[in-house]
Image 1: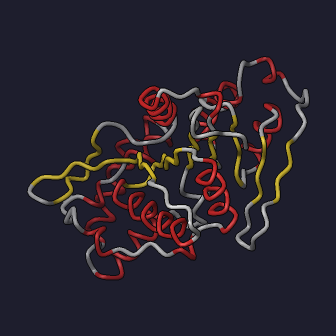
Image 2: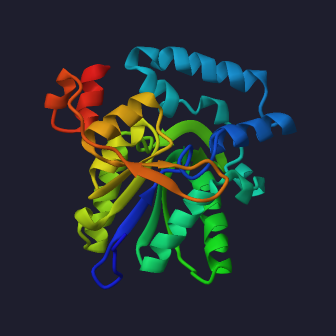
Length: 258
């Protein structure tokens, strides 16, 4: 890591599966709402109906575009939700700390709900301050529409996943007047490929087999975070393995393999 504050650099982190160990923040949130009786079978049926409607558009639309189960829920519901520091990978927090010490801007780019991502950012900010390195974390996440103080179950704009993450990174880079080649990105799934490609230092965190193969072919750093401390990483050699190597980048190879 060689980012310097006077030259400008940023570190972009996905949350679920990258900084936060499974299950995802949204799943934890929904489980808590279910436990409280705020969500029930009616909301579950609403989600299923919307999933069936979106199915022809593909799994991406179902996974990231379906928030019908939250329709009618108070938009302040997340204020009572507590994000625990224990949910974070210790190695991930240490990586955020390294960037903060370098003076790099820290940005969370996540497909989770914006209020949940904001809670995660505040928790990490507190952790950084305790270690003598206070830093403000910018949050870019999926936003929900609300009317009269309640969520409608519709997304404002687009879900923060896939190509939306690349656009978000480019927007931040332009606003900060920094060079993307100096920036870092950390993600764990194919939905993060666009974000990783948008920076000069992409890092695949705990990737599944398919994601690891793509990272291997691109020569990206692969990080193994298991929550027990002590960052372990290895940079994998670029290997010629399939016809997909002729594509320009990992994201294109992933698209060709779908």
